[in-house]
Structure formats: structure tokens, C-alpha cells
Length: 370
Ligand SMILES: Cc1ncc(COP(=O)(O)O)c(C=O)c1O
Image (cartoon, rainbow, N blue to C red; front, side, top):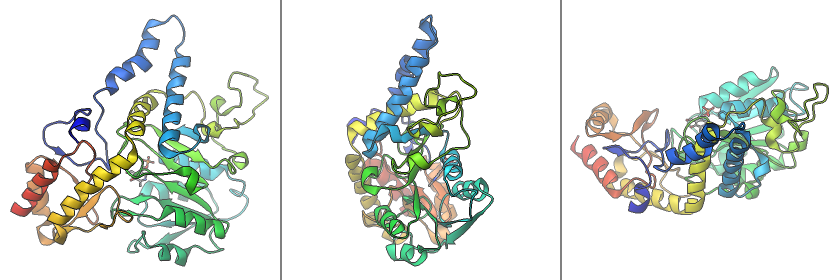
């Protein structure tokens, strides 16, 4: 998509690492200057009003992308901190043992956060080798013994997509809470949080959203929100941050109860700008283009393809392994300026709207000639 390619800074070479860090928009620096620097540099007032409107722009863009209400989002530094705050806020936490189901394929930091957030927690792991796209695997593990289910919408090492909506409805049947990690799916797979009806969703903007690091968030179901009492709070978690009465703390009625002390602003200005870009573009279009390039890759190199191929099962990322030639191929890719990375099951290749058929053709050629 030539017209979108021109919107991003793309260095020489072939960049296929959007599962790690998405490219920065060419318009981001000027937007940041206007939203963050100008109010600070030029007015004889503190710039908080403009800075906080940058946070509103961030939560509104998320709401538009994810089809939900902006007041259900709260900025967080990253997914790990959002998950810890959520875990500690629930009425059952600290009162009784909580049994959580997650996968060995989840991002390790999610396990670290859960293992350490509560004293009385037991984690049941779905073994690494299981197919996380297969609902019957989830049916095998979710029962009345499980209190919370943690699901990654996308598993970044295997390129599998979890059937999130079905898992949530299964969890609901057993009275389990559901927590969904959308780190690897935001801005590449269409998501409708109102339809999902999860208890909690955590994500960040550094990957496919091209919004840089530091702009994470938590989304909380509006029926669950009134029961959440975060432990890590500050004046921005207050119903009225400017009340300034040390003897009176009242939690915000919105998800901002998860906020804390004086917030950071800059990462949310960058991220709000790029989320707005993707909201306007439409994620259906991003996914259609991504899937078309994935399909070309799969058609050219079926013997090396390790990730699922069906659109409902695959993520935005293809996983390829070259058997005994794996190390040698990686070396050739590096020499040819093709930026991919390597994980447990193979190299990860993530075509975004700024990639071209030429990027895929070059990748295929180098692999075939290695
Ligand atoms: C599925 C998934 N979850 C979470 C994260 C990152 O978590 P955090 O924002 O806490 O660093 C990643 C990062 O690669 C990821 O792939």
C-alpha cells in the first residue's frame, strides 16, 4: 500500500519486526511538538490542561479502535503493571486462594506479574505444546476449580490466535473472570471489546500500533469496575484529584481509579497520535493487507511455514523454520538487510501496511538462495 508506506519512517532495508516495534509515523514529531512542547514552551501557565487532553485523545482513540467506552480505559506503563494492579484490586484477592489458568506460551512477564502479585495464588499452566487456537483445549482446562482465565489473543512465538470470544463465554459459564492480553493483536486484528465482554483487557502501543514504548493501558468491564479497589493509587485515582483533603480518598468512578500519582504524558501523546491514524484507516483494512502478504509468503515457502494459515487461526506474524539450515539462513537474511527476529519455533515475520510485496519477494529470494 504505497500511500501508507509514505506515512512512515522506513530506513533502507526490509523491516518485518512490527510484532516488536512498529515504525514511527512521519507526522509524529510535529504532532508531539504541538501537543506537548508548545504548551510548555509558550504559555505563562502550567501546561496540564493540554497535556491531560493528550491523555483523553489516547483513551478516545482506543475506544474508537476497540468499540467501547473511553471511561473504561486507564493508562498504564506496560501490561505487567496493569496486570499487577488489576490482580490486587479484586475483592477475592488476599481473602482466599485464587486459581488462575494461563498458557506456558503466554509472554513470561505476564506469569511473573501473576506469580508475585498475590501470596495466595495457584497458577495452572496449559502446556507449551498445546494448540491455543483449539477451543477444545480450553474446554479441557476450564472448570469450576478455575477462578480466573488469562488469555493472550495472539501467541507471539507460535503465531496462533486464541478464540477469545468463545473462551470468554466458556469462562462465564463457570463463573471465571477473564483477562485478555492484546499486546500482539491491537491494530492488526479487528477487536470489539463490547462484544467480547471480558472482565479485563491489557495492552500497549509499541508494536503494531506504532505508538512507541510506555503507553500501556488497562480496560475494565463496567459491571466489574465498581468492585475493583486498586491498592496502588494516588491523587489521579481520586474522584476529584483537586480536592486535596488528606483525610478523604474516594476512588474515581471510571477506570482512572487504576491511575496513581502525577501521570506521565509524553508516551500517550505519541501513542494517541498513531492510534488515531489506525482508527481512521480501519483495522479491517490493515488485517486484509497483512493477510494478503502472509498468504504470499505461505504460498512461496510452504515447507518452512510453522504458524497457522487460516485467517481465523493465524496472527499478524508468520513463523518460519529452516531445519538444519536455520542459522545459515538467518545469517543471510541479516546480510541482506531483512529485519526479522528468531524465537523458539523459528523466525518471526510481520508484514504491516508499510511493507510491500517487494519486501516479501526479497525475503523469499534470500531464503531460497541460502
Ligand atoms: C503477548 C505479549 N504480552 C505482553 C508483552 C509485554 O508486556 P509488558 O508491556 O509488560 O512488557 C509482550 C511483549 O512482547 C507480548 O508479546
